[in-house]
Image 1: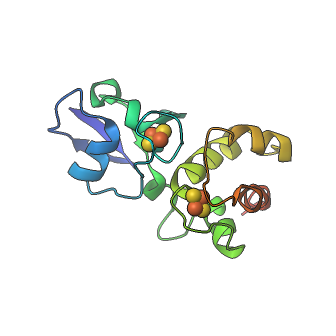
Image 2 (image 1 turned 180 degrees about the vertical axis):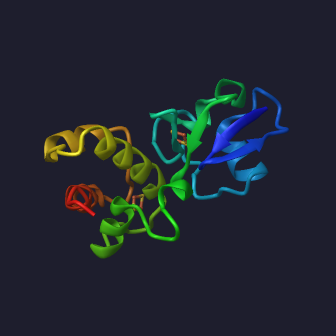
Length: 150
Ligand code: FES
Ligand code: FES
């Protein structure tokens, strides 16, 4: 199964029905993408597939053959964090951090598509990303701060 992950061509040997989340973590060692609910409900496992954010726990690898997958690891450039990552760090917006990978992937896609997204739009976009620590408010503020040009 050939695809692109974080800009590099990879070949997966996992069975086609294997969840992409499992292949990313267990076969490729990309453990930044988290297993939360396993049911497409929490957003911890979100990855970007050809510009669309999907729950990787509910995406069998056969569906991503030939496609471009970006995980949280693929958002930094030459060791420089993505603006959303940097803003979350700067503001210490997260608490335990478990939800953050999926939030960063979702927020990065939003700001790519809608660079001027306002607070309501950011909150709406992150609605499917659950945070048990209650850090959503700080995380939304960090995403808004990340809209500044870099
Ligand atoms: S682990 Fe995939 S949505 Fe919760
Ligand atoms: S910071 Fe802990 S779940 Fe969000």
